Image (cartoon, rainbow, N blue to C red):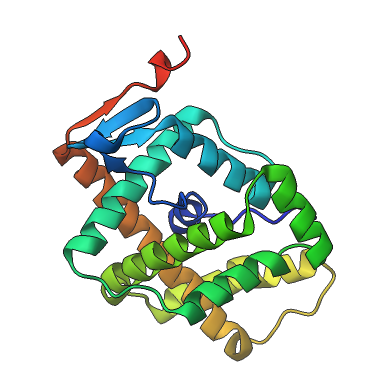
Length: 218
């Protein structure tokens, strides 16, 4: 069973983490270079690895150009996290990430079959999930404290999203009190996404970024 695509910048970002960071020092290049970010490079194999991961999660991958842009965003987030000496993820975070991914399939057999079809080993997948958790935790810690919500916004989401969606499914909508905490988290994540997107655009403008993807395979 194909996993459901998660919306929003943060979720999209989290689906594109390459297992070995996606960037290596220029003197270690053993692959075709598809982009240079400052003094580091992104390789064709990194693009291909992310494509395989997206096939596992969504059943298909984005274009190479889109994937490269996501890898550049990953580079920015990782560099900022490392510069701030952000705490590495715990084994528990990794285990929970692996479990969430597996539960997005109908059963373990479907999960393993899709992983093998995508060409991702179990060890490689664990590396990817570890990187996901690290960047996700960093973005959350950086932007969550600055997200401000009003009760009006929470009520509007309940009335405009929760109730109509429940009715579309022929279900009784949950009470506002029962849904409030979930709505609050959804809106906080939206706020994180918006701020992270703005920050990444500003960061890109300050960096020296050169893309060679169109030259690959020419």
